Image 1 (cartoon, helix red, strand yellow):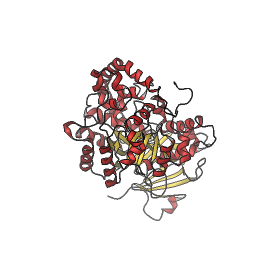
Image 2 (tube, rainbow, N blue to C red):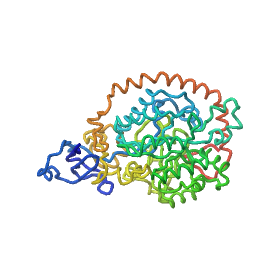
Image 3 (cartoon, helix red, strand yellow):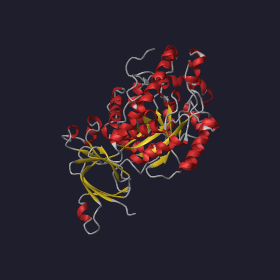
Image 4 (tube, rainbow, N blue to C red):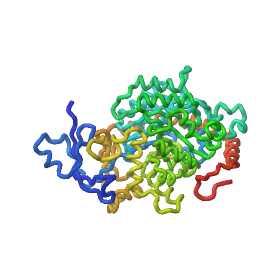
Length: 510
């Protein structure tokens, strides 16, 4: 089958290394999955040969690389709007999949499509889905992968696994919470039937295969503190064998620092030293959240070429603190951005993440050299691509890159007048001006509407399953209220320990 040739004509093409305020009007020739040429006057240049299969009039459009949502979990898309701010450890008990009964294939399909649709309609063309399926079931994974294939978003997929219990790793839970409630405070993220989490991942990679259109594998240990040395070493071996990126949570909350110093004393009380011993510290590693790093650990990240994926919206709502953005920048640690769970950030929108990235850096450092809009755009595109193992493939509109790009309507209020493409994308735009989205050279959003799935059918599928989820959530909420006083006591007690650093803006409790 011949490759489709699409000519995108006359767009203002955003170039990370060019004029980020007033991009030049250029044409983009797409051949199959990749960008072939980016230059003016391509229609005339192509006149001697076969015409393009389609010409897209983009003379009133801004062409921008598709955003890379480098940290995302599709398992709780249907829980958006369920919770107000609460400490991360309390949120665990309300939202994580092990708290809920196994979900149906229909619900898993609906939530996967809905989350991907929200991403695409906000200009996100690639997601790193760190998915928890608990207990694991092949049919549920197949439903996820089929949904992603149908809607057409690029997916870097990992199964979230761990082999330690949360109750054994969160300070004071074991001591304060009555034993009868311990089963609800964190089961290892494993599978039924005795298969180890790592064996599950290996089997799924073999079963699904490494080569699929718009799909690639990553490895997703839930966190270092929740993983045994054996599990981390096995992940390191698997990453090396298949050249797979490893993405995990690290230092997301203040209590996690206390737990680290208690349980990883043999590794200098450092998660970085712990993963170094397992063979994971290197350029294939990207660490989500990364709020409570010590200075020597930041230096170790930079030296190893590891990356951080910041999720400012969810970190605020989960009372986790503000990542040391300036310290990462000054050390030379590459930064990517994510939107995290719908149950804790409530939205898949990189415009929010970019604006918060710049804003939080500005109010947590008195210097003037804080991230500007072009840097935020890089973090949301090229930084994300590097973090998920797709450096050189996505994140820019240039010959040879995969054709993942978006066209924004310059007549919409957020982009009119266009004083600065970068600043208006970061500080003004919400996704309202989005007109067209292409992934791998395929148009998946046109005139602001999804064209790969039926929006009415998707709404109906969500409405068909949400009643059951809401009923289950009410039971989870009632159980939480029973144990809430002990969890609150544990949270407050964790503030009694001086950890030698602060990651809050303003006066935090002492």
